[in-house]
Image (cartoon, rainbow, N blue to C red; front, side):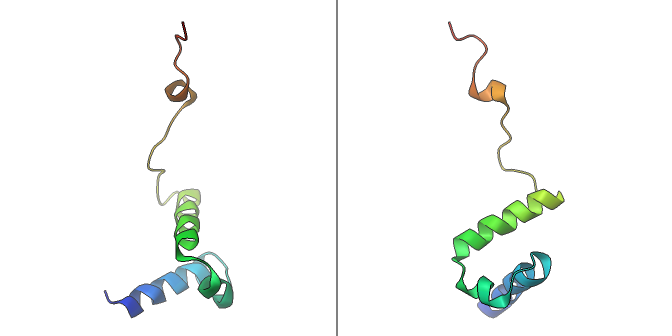
Length: 64
């Protein structure tokens, strides 16, 4: 896939799937857009978070 095809797909994701205007898509930093796209996929159940932590993973039971 070349660069033109990649940006066409990203533009489609932003405008159709996420409801952005084309102007907002082109003015947004690419890293922010990719983060929003990943969150959108997680919201729809298409993707799972990379690391799922519970409170027990963060705070151990035995603090003594």
